[in-house]
Length: 448
Image (cartoon, rainbow, N blue to C red; front, side, top):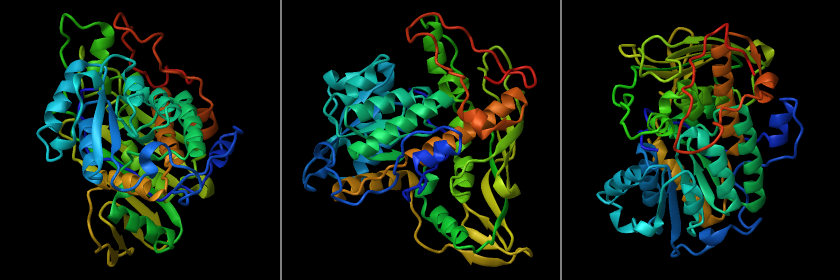
């Protein structure tokens, strides 16, 4: 919507070798398989004009015109000089106008062609964007809407850039997996906004870990601690706003819309840990979390801190902390601790037990958000289709599972999390009354 994206993000062009069948089989759920990754050129016809010669224009649509969506649109335009932004959608018309004004001041303004008739607001804006004859759609609305938006994009035959996270509850994760399987059948690209998997240094770190340079993984310490959200305070309610509009305008602060900070933002560090663990799911997790630093009445219902311990097969633990509390010491890092040495993923280095350097990445640096789009569009031009569905769904579920453990103060298994019946969707999408979500009370809130 209109709230800007915060902090850094995560992703990977290397495809997860695990199939959807393996993913869900590990959760006790049987279904058909999903191949992920870059398909060999020519296996299937690439949808719409993406298979055309390099001189042909790829038409781009944007759904969700906040800061992250606006940034993604600019990156898509920079990624391929034969792209054109032709349609934009958001729940709020003012968000579209703000985004459009910023894009028209950018270096790519000459390829922003979004007249009034291709500016769509309201809850069904995503359908109108996808139906506006776009080749690629950028999905950057609040995470709650991602499953429905992605499903429709695939149905419409659009290649998708899918911002993280991809769901806020287990039913949403299942919808993402099913839509991703259908995208695979249609040979549609699905690139995730988990941008660290597109960072050259992080890729080098994971390559070193995969080659055994740290030995067997013993534990991972991951953190996503940031000093609050001072640039994105909750907006005070205007008299004309309905309950629904008030919550949507402040979407980050409501679990049903954002999934909580552990899902919407801290997923970045969890995704790096998942990457190191070869995207295999954990057995279970326990967590402590709460809401202390934001005072009533305007504070939403997400927690401001979580401390989760994930248990993996073989006794490996992932110790994860995250918070958004004003005055906290900021730390966004992922330390993979092995039987031989330790690797700090984001500052790509490996050190021995004495702290002596064994390896440091000295290759080229990149802007990972831009590389996501560079590789998406290069793949479309070459007929090599990226599909990041499995890992983007799995990392989202990993974060959701941690939230479940924090909210309930119970040990949650992967099977429980994947089979959870908790559906955070409101009864209806309309500009009217909407109950104010309650704040979870660990130990009292029940697992669903």
